[in-house]
Length: 251
Image 1: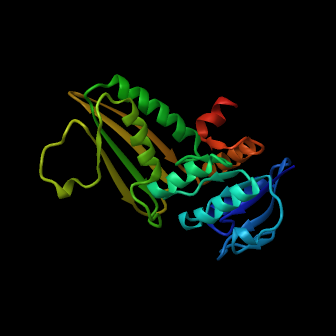
Image 2: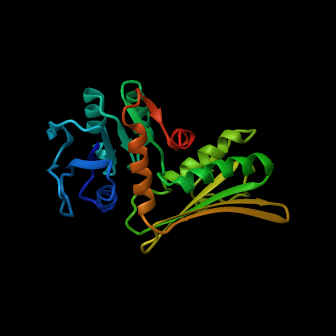
Image 3: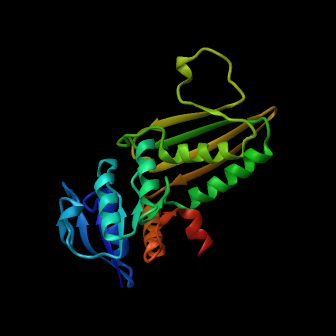
C-alpha cells in the first residue's frame, strides 16, 4: 500500500485527489497539509508540513507556490519523493526545484494532463516542419486563476523554442507596442472567465494556410489522475528531476 502525504488537501484539487485515491486499492492518504482547509478531510491535517512526524512514501503537492520552500526542505531532509503539481512558480523557484532534485526525487511539470504533454510533442514537430510560420499561443482559464499566462502556455512556448533555428522572444502585450509582428516572436495571450477549466490553442499562421493544435480540459479530474500516476511512478526513485516524459516512457 503506497502511503501519500497530500499538501493542499483542503483545496478544490485536494478534494478531487482524495476522491480518486479513495477508489484505489493500492494507495492511501495517511495525512494532509493545509493551513486553511476549506473542505473536510477523513485523515489528519497539519497546518505545516514540518508538523507531520510520520513517514509517507510520497508527497503530492497541489497547494500554493509560497509552500515550496518548506516542502523542498522536508523532502530533502526526510528523503520523501514529491510530486510538485502546483502552478505559478517563479523562475527563481524553478531553479530551487532543480537544485533540490540533486538530493531528492522530484516530479515537476507545468501540467499533469497526459493530453497536454502529447500536445507538447505535436507542437515541437509542427514548429520544426512549418518553417517561417507565425506562432501564437492562446490559453483560457477560470476567473479565479491568478497567474497569466498559464504555466502550461509557457511550457508550450519553451518547447517550441527548443526546435526553432533562431532565438525567439515572447510577446505578452501587443497593445503596448505599435509595430509589425517580428518573425522571431511567439505571442502568448490569456483569457480569464467563468469556470473554464483549461484550454490551450497553438496557432501556426503561414501564407494562405493556418494550422491549429488544441487541447481542452473539461474536468480537474485529469490533473488529479496525472498527479496520482506520477506519485505511483516516483515512489522509490533515486534523486533526480522527473517529468511526464519519464512516466510515459516507463508506462
